[in-house]
Amino acid sequence: MGGANQGWLLFGIGLYLAVILAVGFVTWRRMRSLDDFVLGGRRLSPFSAALSERASGESAWFLLGLPGAAYVAGFAEFWTVIGSSFGIFLSWTLIARRLNEESRRAGALTIPDFLESRFGDNTRVLRVVAMMIILFFYTAYVGAQFDGAGKILETTFGSSLQGIADGLGSLIRGVTFGAVDPALTPKEAGMILGAIVVVFYTFMGGFIAVVWTDVVQGLLMMSVVVVLPLLGLAALGGPSGMVEAIVSRTAATLPEMPAEDAAKVAVGFDALRMSAGKVGWGLVNGVMFGGLMWGLGYLGQPHLLARYMAIRSPEDVRTGQTIAVMWVLLAYWGAAFVGIMAIGLLPDLDYANREQVMPLLALKLLPGWLAGLAIAGAMAAMMSTADSQLLVATSALIEDVYVKLVRPTVDAARLVLLSRLATIGIAAVALFLAFRSKDFIFDSVEYAWTGLASSFAPVLLLSLRWKQMTRWGALAGMVSGMVSTIVWKNVDVLGAFLDIKLATFLIALLFAVGTSLATRSEAGESRG
Image (tube, rainbow, N blue to C red; front, side, top):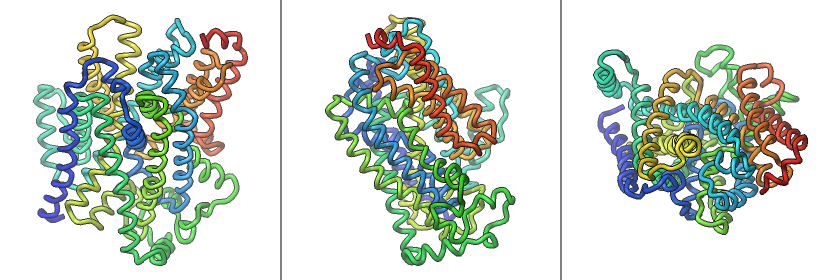
């Protein structure tokens, strides 16, 4: 890449980062209490809440994982688009208003807070289990976002990052007095840089900084996935050219790759079919369920549920829902079409590099400074999720453990300071996990997403809408959701039997309902 073009790329990305960092400085003095840091004082407008919920709901999966999956699977990946879109609609319809009303009534700042209050759980077991689930899955989830930052910057700047990698390595050696002597790659340097930016503005401005940046990031992400497919379609010569380019991908034209990987790539007319050429249970479980069941997860992600709790009034929820659904209808289809267009425009891309489709397409189709902004959109997808997840994990440590279990009376300014320190600590653990992970972003996010969804979605839905739900049912639902996710992830034959997202959701739902019915004498008193 030429030096002039790279300079424009730096300008585009730098412009975006300057805006994001400025938000951190502006919101620094607004953090006066833990309520401000965790929920922004419950003052979100429906516009801010909707864009923040959408931006934080997508992650690096949205602009890296989903286009990469569409590049491999073709139109079969639109099952994921359909499932996710419907799941977002259901979440706003079934959960948003009820959770806003009941969390206000209980004065709850977090999901563990809400569950403890809803069931009058004086034993604190619900709070502790919910906190453990959040910390377990979110550290892996945030690590996947940092991995996304590394892939984006490595794809964009390549070996030019090696100087920064060497400098960061020298800094780490100095700080650790030589105890740690890393030889960082460009990707690892990008991971560290992405983590630093996210931690900085979350550290500075808490929930308000996260929401303000999410609004910018949500608009940028939507613009990228609308513009890139249109430019790609024009470059391919219109719909007929797109179809011809997709059909021309055959097994013979694929880059050399292991047979196991080549078998996963849809070729010829199969890439145009939503069945991907599969039939029977392979179609239903492997293609349809695998995509549609992503939607279940939107009912149980604590970093999204926090937006519902923070909307300034229950009456504003309907407006927020309308804005969120409009964003989905524009953005989700575009993200998948980025991968579809890349089949024709990037035919020689190695399977192992499929999650670099979006930045590579931006570099191919856009002038330097616009490509920089588009790639900043991918950074936005990573940051808008990582910041929210860091905030939820921080609140689990400070609100759900320190305040509720250790020191109920503590100075507000000290709580904000402890929250900022916890943010740094959790980010460090997540970055460590990202360095060690060998999974693709799509796979890492699917695991964490599924764990959170199965642990919280059935329990929360039943808690808000079923009067017979008991605290023992809530506990059984959370534990079974977490355990079944770990088991399904590590036993391959189970995934072939039933998709992990559907299986774990059903298991948690059955345990929650069954245990509640067995202990239903508690239900009346748990409603208080």
